[in-house]
Length: 156
Image (tube, rainbow, N blue to C red; front, top):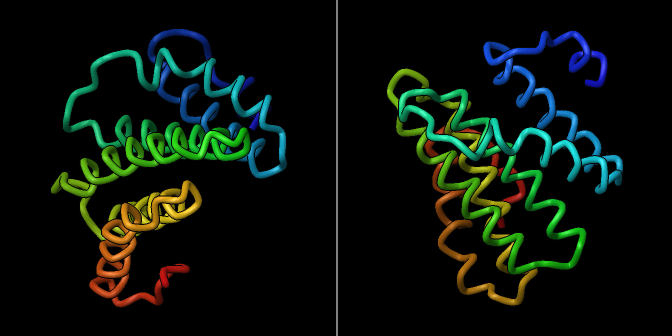
């Protein structure tokens, strides 16, 4: 991902590509345990990913926001901020729901991404000691997997 970032030309026209690459690298860093590196990448792309208005029809931008919040939730969980992780997962779910509602991109992939985020939100509530708050997201995730005709992805 570092090589991909180096290949992205500077300038406003490439901001979306750069932000997407930074979120992907942050996701990879988080998976490898480099939480500080992941947080640094998130901060670097925050002005592009979160700090400006995005047209409601720009599915890619909203999906990138969801990815940003998903990685942020991982960092908060790692740092022991379990309630903060729930908040981050709620933001991710909000963005995933929006993307899934867009007719021009609706389909199994957007629904599967929503189901994964809902499941993680439910798990976050459970980890934060609020299992009752996690029941509805978990049930919704299960319904989506069933509607898609796919095996549940870790949903009890």
